[in-house]
Structures are given as C-alpha cells and as structure tokens.
Image (cartoon, rainbow, N blue to C red; front, side):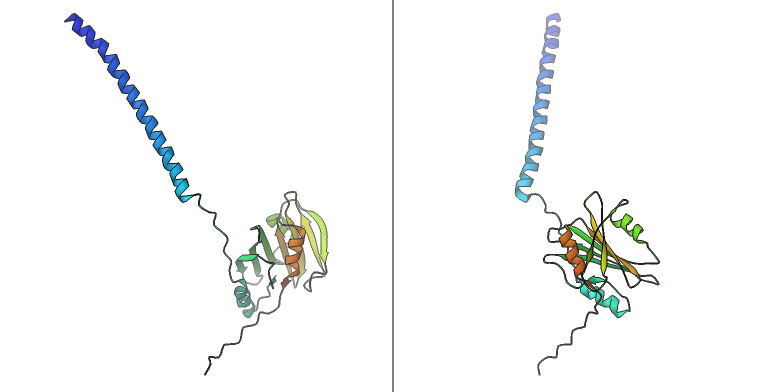
Amino acid sequence: MSEQGTGGEQGSPGRYNRSFGGLTASVVVIVVLVVGIFVLRDLVFGTPPEQQPESVEYLDSVQGLQQNGFDVVYPVSLPEGWIVTEVGAELGEQPSYRFNLYTADEEFVGIRQESLESARLEELLEQYVDESTRSEDPLTDVGDLAPTWEGWSDDGGDLAYSAEIAGTTVLVFGDVPVDELSDLVSRLGTDEIATPDPVTPPS
C-alpha cells in the first residue's frame, strides 16, 4: 500500500505538467489564429480609405441669400481643383457668412465675413488664425472689392488676408502658399447671380 501511494504521488506531477504544456500550446494557437485573422482581413479588405470632402453647390446658396437682401462676399469662381464644402450664414441685424473650401491638395481654406459692429479684426484673427499674428505684405490691385488687403501670418504657417468691405470685415485664411491664397482673394466678388431663363420646350 505504501509503495502504491508513493507511485501515485509521483505520477500526479507528471499529469500536471502535461496539462500545463497543453494549455500553453492552446494559447499559442489562439494567438496565431487571431493574428492570422487580422492579417487576412487587411489583405482582403485593405485599409479603409479616408473620407473625401464633398462639394456643395455654393452659388445656389449665395443666390438665395442675395434674393433675401443680403450682401455676401463670395468666390465668383474657384481655382482649378478647389471645392466649397460648406456655406453658412447667421442672419439678423448683423449677419455673418462663412465659406469652407478645400484646395486641389485637400488643404482647408476659410472665408469669414462679419459686421464691423459685431467683431473686430483682432478677434477674427485670434479665432481663425492664431492668438499671435504678425503683419505681412499686403495685396493690392486684386479686384474691385478693396484697394488693399492686409496680410497676416503665424508661426505655424497659416496665412490670412483681411479687408473692410461695405461695413463688414472679410477674412480669408489657410495654410496654403501666398500665390494660392492671393488668387482666391482676386476671385471674390459681390455680383448678383442671375437666375437662368426658363427653358421653353420645343413645340
């Protein structure tokens, strides 16, 4: 009896070791399977593409504002490959307007128009460019809206141009080269958008 008992005790550790080894092997298999699933998913489905900004028919929005008596400074045309993704307006006694654009390289550019009575230029620069901006060379001879557009920049590479137009401050800003932003400024206008004549169906 004594020998059988000893033998049983010697056998128990052996069975325990085999169970532990089996558990370890199972964990390794599970890890390999999980990694394989993720690798296979990436191979089959690939990395999901980033969502591209969608353009809006901004001239329709501008026309609607104009028909309700609001004077909006807007891009009469856009540089090649640029799109407008949002047109916004806060209407009332002191209306304001905003245009969000993306360049052909998908860089953001903004246009903001605020009443002189509701916002100072310093506040707009602080909100949309940087708390600390410095003066840059102005733009001249870039259209009929303003004789001069003041230039601004910050340490992060943002550039902005501002002008007072018909009792409002207009700010154009973005992290884009000078020539691209000045080109957009030259395209700004307030011309009334004509409603196309109705098409008469052939008789």
